[in-house]
Length: 196
Image 1: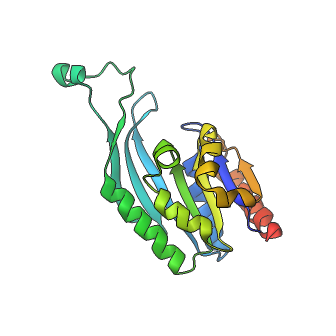
Image 2: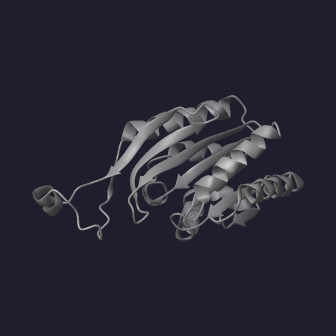
Image 3: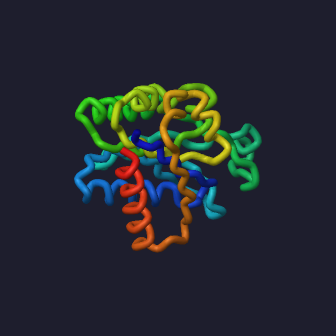
């Protein structure tokens, strides 16, 4: 059975870099990967301020979210930099990404990489969850998901079909060199092919 690969790590741990490296390695190996990658713009302290979704291999993207503004910041015109306002999401970006994932599944992609699964998906069943439910039912599909470690059990509770798959947990490291990412990607692919 094809394993489920979970890239687990906190914010700024290197999950997105690893997803992009895995996509390139899988494309080079003719595995027909498809990916939805979450890129962000960060403030000087490293916290995300804006999010956008990018599909690979095409590079098409959609604006996804920006942090909302609290009333006190609206009045003063600036934030104190300590409080993180919640994100305000653009639903059309999720609709677009889900349609792209479903199209890739229909065209027989060999691997699906989704960066990043968050509370919106695992606790509310919203965001990218409709497409993930379809992907969970696809036979022989290598599924690679990035998320925070605290969301793993909630994700598997929402997608119980995935619990039957062997799980491979990878802890990204943002300080890895590019060549290390390449070797890690090849190790993940080899491990997944051995489990088929």
